[in-house]
Length: 301
Image 1 (tube, rainbow, N blue to C red):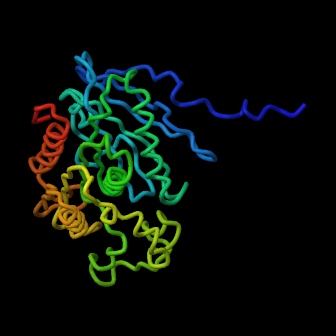
Image 2 (cartoon, one colour):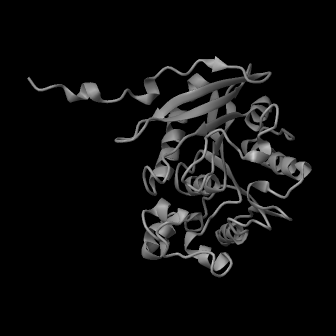
Image 3 (tube, rainbow, N blue to C red):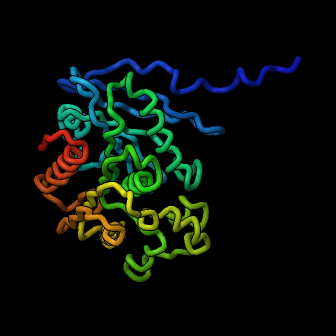
């Protein structure tokens, strides 16, 4: 009798029990490591949920996508400028009435584009399925990411589940991969280099894969149904040129939208070079934008 192979199939993440809650800050519940997808041939993908305690009804949702050049990164890490915050940024958002989901996704060493976008779509689907258990209103979702995570947040917001995504925030994100050679200083970027972070994401150099490079660029997916955007980028970014964020804003303008673009004077990547007050302002602008997009009418997380 042949072995019943269905017994080897992983359990449906929608039916798994949620992790036990921790309480990392006053008024905050943290569910760490909930499995949301099990891609074939890959590790289980998990997310953390930061939830407000004692909410009166379902709360709006922020999905934070971590950076790391699509090659590394931690799902709950907003960057070194926020490492000393207590309570941390996600706990502060939960205290302000948001649920915050921080998902893992497959890195470029595990799978090429569009796996990362597909993983975030799976995370949004799982959140919708488990919304009753979590007490979240996924019809009021804001995507937010920094660096490569901002790229993925924008790409997902522009191509997936447009009816539930109310807004998107990008911090110093690449948005137009074919144009990176134009935007970076001469001699610092080679679109034919198979070892660049962009090539590792695409599965080959952007110059050799113009179709995938265009598909992986948020600027190529803007349209009349695009959600509102808040786009923040430092003028002195030495890794991702600020021109990349300008390109996204221009593409959204051409599609009939009025994105909020703020070029932060003197800011380098990861907000290096900014004062604590300026870093706090970037966070507050993000929280205020999320409040406006989700109709909570609150500000100043």
